[in-house]
Length: 397
Image (cartoon, rainbow, N blue to C red; front, side, top):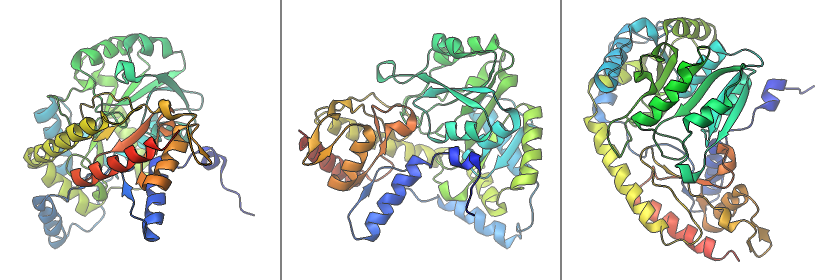
């Protein structure tokens, strides 16, 4: 009898990965699909990082690593936090995992009990609610709109807190909106958190280096809540290392210890070769990262300029990451032949079918009035995709 677990039945499929698979299926049939659905830099991993991986193989880093990661990598992470974020951690507060996604689910499984609540500002990254559910807790959504640049205010945070609140999770820079919180905005949130000592903040900073407006700000910088903040980061986005699967946390020691215990029974340590490559990436600094960020900013500017000429799209101005998240409700109720657009999911499927451009519906991010487009592809392909989108949208009546 085929019967999967209740926890898996309750878990949705990742919308971003599902749309990416639909794109690949069409491409396999010979359809010229431009994929704007997945958040993956189109750059190759820098050569010095690949060289470090090759050396690690030659140096026989091929045996089981320590569960929380090699000490040399954890020290490099400690130094990165100090150098780039002015955050003080000890190596025992660092745990290396198989990607930042793995880091987050580790934390949730380590701190959440059935019935606990986790505040999730919407729009949110698609996997946050699924992870909360897997840990048998309940997501509590705080709706943030394009008019507030998709950011949660201190008043909204305060209103969402109940005696059951155990955690808050958010990303800055944000997936899917590209917004980022300023120091003052984070300080106002920290003042609220300070009043509620049971709440752990999970700060997803994986897009830290893809920042178009200046210095990255972390909510962990405020001493009054520092001992209740878990900083999640990794090498995937900033260093073009998505396939290497290395993420990490800087956390209160008791959480790091709990996560290590969990990981010891779950996955053990992350890939040895990828760890040594990540060590090289972090120790080399951010020069290569800044080169990539400059290209992302150029693409972002070109995308926003083009979108001005597409009637019905309402956009904010992303300050980081590599996404635009336009509001598309103008098109709801319109149709093309027998296709009626009632939701952003309908619109995403229409654009895939009609324009052969893959996007992701905002429903998956908690903002059903929006659509996510990634510009982590060449400017030439991006502009061709937008031309197709503009034409397809113009045919909706």
